[in-house]
Image (cartoon, rainbow, N blue to C red; front, side):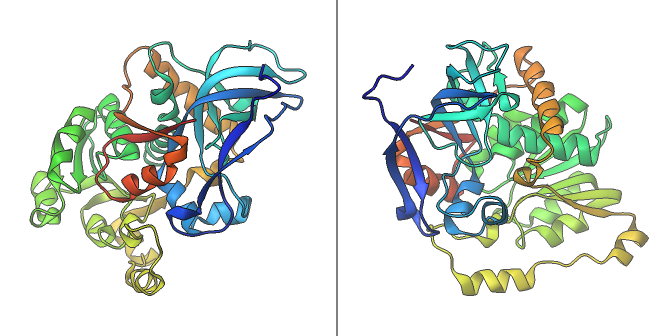
Length: 349
């Protein structure tokens, strides 16, 4: 239990902006309501989406929450207090928590159905780096694409969080995955996660390189880049192939501030997919956004349990993690938006 002098800390974005919009504030340690557990947070996951929230461009943050807002979709820590009616947990249990925003905090109250036991072989940092990227990858792979052994996948941003998770899921499913990375220093990271081949997007014609590796096309292409790669990704699909879109990183700034003119230009240049063409070519386009799946709690819980079982027995491996103090949330945002990070970033409250 917290002492009388203990204070809770969290990051708040009062209104959208640059890195300076991330403010550390203090307040009372929250008390759990009936059906909730309070966590003393040891690590908070950092995702690219958190920066989009900071910029004011994340649709679900505006529609489901509004500003002021505390970003963060995932945490790991210990159970600190139990609300009325909570069973099956004890104070001191090591856990992972799923949040719909609010994760950049030292103390957090969450409904019991959003809490999961942290596998014994994982650190708090590894646990906090797990839910968002692996659940997103699981949803795309097993609820949208439905992999079959021997298929070929092309995974963009293959050394990032979701890309690394997709490569591991491909390996488990017997799928041959080719990873596309943004820099040469990321090639080995992608191969370590399960990529059979790795292409550096800035070194020559990445579309030609991908086509040479799979002349008959890819059964699925996972694209988080947006306008920079979507047309090429669509053209690389095999008959009955699926293009799964889960981000638009190339359209967003790398200096923390939105250039509205460039954003409008990139929006105008973004491919529009014609249903008539999809029908005749037998190819399709899908999309995923984990925060809009928050209403599907039973589905997400089923996915988390599926993933945690495989982390517990070693079939899935934790991602490389770099940690920053909570006070340095802006530095973590700069790092993930630079395009140079590998694996996941976390904050330590």
